[in-house]
Image 1 (cartoon, rainbow, N blue to C red):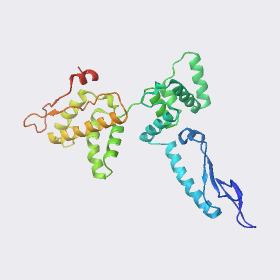
Image 2: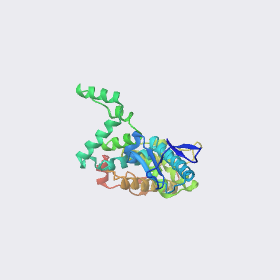
Image 3: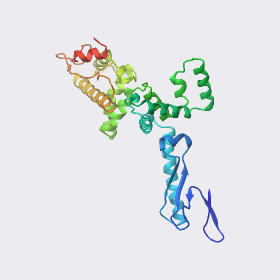
Length: 292
């Protein structure tokens, strides 16, 4: 706190207020928590409040502190989606390409040094002892001690990061609409898929999952009433999944095939139960997916 005099008889303590010069405007100055410095990009937040009025400066400081507290809380406990985005930015800040981390080994080494600095001293000592004894250290033993953004960035740097179907769904829905009804409609194909086959990395879905998905919906196994979904609706769901997977593959430069790619042949008169659909997938795609 800094003591500032309002009158000859009254003085107040105002946190984060900095009198940079005797005649110039007051400044805001606040130290960034150590754990957030790599994410914020600096150790101090400081800027001119553009006023010499103490009461006005105090109001501005209160507003800025509230905004910073909210932002720093999001950085400290982000959603999975937030952790992913922060992780990418963190790697880029160290000069590491999130898509090809080993493109610059020197930058990667600097990032790994930063990861080590984030670990508690006791954990670092334990890992150092394990290293000297040639005892393997599992990534999860490091991840659990890291802030969320560092854990995500560390996984990306080691090639361990996995883009899940739920990640794909969130991004696809967010890019398409914010209307509640439309969000529900766009999410439904994913909800059926995840309930049936699990929330797996996009690369983890196989041809068998696609067949099971179609058969599951046609047979009505997704519904408590056992009522099957019409082929036109199943086709629409497949189209949504195909587009969503394609978007994630492109946006995140994932080196995988889109398992939903291709067309669907619906048998004549197929209403719902038991008949298989034929997916037209190229031979090269089958080979790359390991399905041939």
